View 1 (spheres, rainbow, N blue to C red):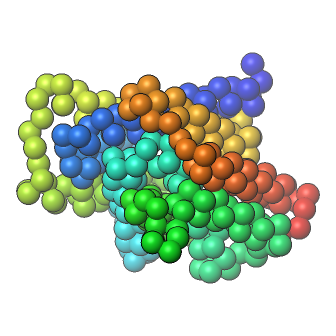
View 2: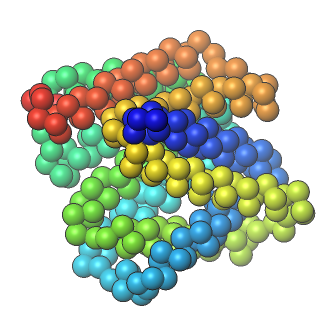
Length: 291
């Protein structure tokens, strides 16, 4: 098996697990607050990452960029909390489509705050992607067709903020430090409201909540393996298969089927995002001018 084929197969598995975790979250949201779902997920992830964190703890919490960590963790918390909320109140496919708009927000943020240059092709891709977002949320004279779509947009903006911060932090911080801060502090932020929001689950609910954490942890682990095995541009493009999985799970579990607006918007968002991913890969290899 070639490295790229191995990377693609692993990426297909990771995207399937991410879509499954989202579907399980939508199921759990019928009985539990999204912050409780997020809290249990973070507890499971924290348990999973204790061994690598403990190896150099508490040294891996030392940083000279605490403010930037704060921005990154705020973005990550908004991305996760609003992402879970969006899955709970929107059709699964719609929430997944809008989540991919984080690609365009990230581009705008790295230009504004990191000073990266962006050429006309990438600006065109961003514009097309945002047209796709507008088609999905359908703003009109009476307002947004589904106001809940703004929750998914907030999640995408939070994810873009976290990714932009990581780009700056990764130049000076170790992976262990980045891992430790997110595992601990996102869990703490989600845990504080549990004083008022906690609902003790029965056995079925406990299994469901823990399963979300386990599937999410495994998905991240397999996703990292995929990136190590294959070319980043190829592996990253497989992420958009999550739309197919989301559509299947949405129809099977919730009798949802994406409407024509969601399908048309998804085509524009995914197409422009794939263009951005591959142009970025070519730019890094030195085969084209800045995007």
